Amino acid sequence: MGKLEFFPLAPDADNDSTLYHLDFAGNVPLQGAQGIAFKVTEPAGNPCCDGPESRSGERWMAFAETARGVEELLSLVTARNDASHCDDPEVDTETTYHAEVKFERDSSDRIIAVTATFQEETKEFSGEIAKPRTVSRRTGALRYRWNPAGFQFEEIK
Image (cartoon, rainbow, N blue to C red; front, top):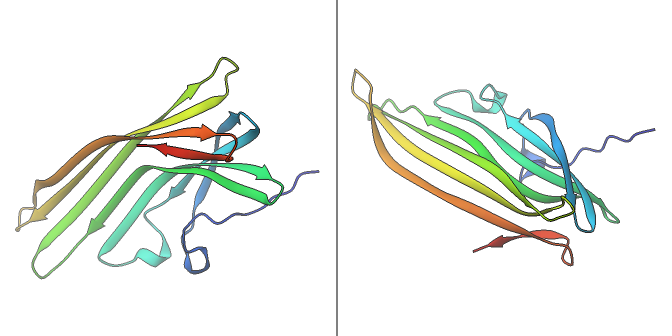
């Protein structure tokens, strides 16, 4: 017989009214733990976000069972789209973010490191014929190494 346990998906879980969608993303074999990953989607049509602001996104989240209960091991944003419409002055902005998650494995096929390679771009739209203008663009990589003694992923700087 199985057990379904819900865990917080947002930093302020008590005040979070987002309707998340969870999809199984795979097993996360680690030294000293067996994790499970989910793709957590925050769709644009959430009831909290009516009006001039729109937010949608996706995260890759890994969890593992411990003596203290279920613990989050790592949470990586893999997609985000934030849009803002303003009538005064008439300038709209949109920020898009996309990351690809890759795993480094040891000879026993356990995950020893995770890398998220990302691209983020912010555009402004202004005027009657809303032509986009790129305001900022950034790329990079976030790297994490599994620390079995600390039972956590640690960021590699």
